[in-house]
Image: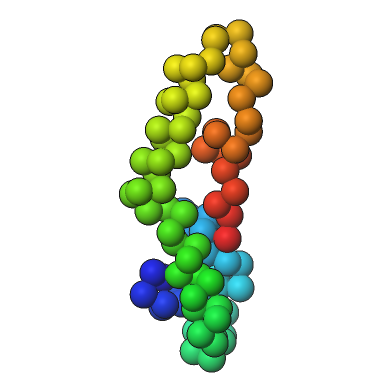
Length: 96
């Protein structure tokens, strides 16, 4: 994806978390249709998908991890529940 390739994946497993629904398939026939569709995708969409991958880069992970640790170290235990939601991984807006 980071090189501009369009991912075509089964609609189960971990890939579904970051590959848009229109590039997922549930049968061989659907896979063929998705592949044909992916072959005509324009440069703008390829670039958009490539940028999506950056949310999962090592540098992004390190930065988010450091933000969470920094917030936890500077917040009293009684106030941890009040930290902004975007600090917590499951609430991060990395969905494609």
